[in-house]
Amino acid sequence: MHLKIHKYIPTSEVEGPGKRFVLWVQGCSIRCENCFVPHTWNIDEGKDVSVHELYTIISSYKNEIEGITVFGGEPFDQVEGLYNLVKKVKENTKLSVMIFSGYTYEHLKRRQDKYNQLLLDLCDIFVDGPYIEKLHDLSRPWSGSSNQRYFFFTNRYEKLAKELNIQNKLTITIQNSGEVVVNGIAQKDTIAYLEDLIKN
Image (cartoon, rainbow, N blue to C red; front, side, top):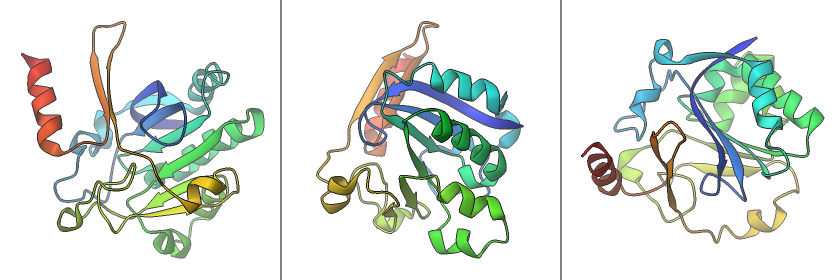
């Protein structure tokens, strides 16, 4: 069992509560207009990584992080592989799971794929809905437009469910390879400025 991934960051504090392992899967069937990450759309540009290898990498950080966060691309386009990864994480660690999807919760419930519900059942936090530019809103943490909803499926983040009093942040990381990684939520002009700065 494999997943097509775009990249991962072993530890981040800007993609969900606490320190988290962040995984971006590659490939998206939704392709929101003016998406923040269109470079994650084409599944053929992804790296093929086995579920076992990804689990091994994630579990090596289990004492440094609180949970994992999965973005896309579109995670539910690879639902069976992602379910198998998240199931191994949940069964063998105490890490929480947060997943973002451009599909709505209702759409995923209607789809005739047993893995949709199995994966949702493993989520502590699920954020749904496509990015809609005319509803652009960065006043809440981690989401880009006001239509996107937060679902707290367990009581692990009960306090957070009552009050999402967290500010969006950006982090800039220089990898051992020399690659500069910018992640988190910011206005598009800020991201464009940083990308130009890095290129020059």
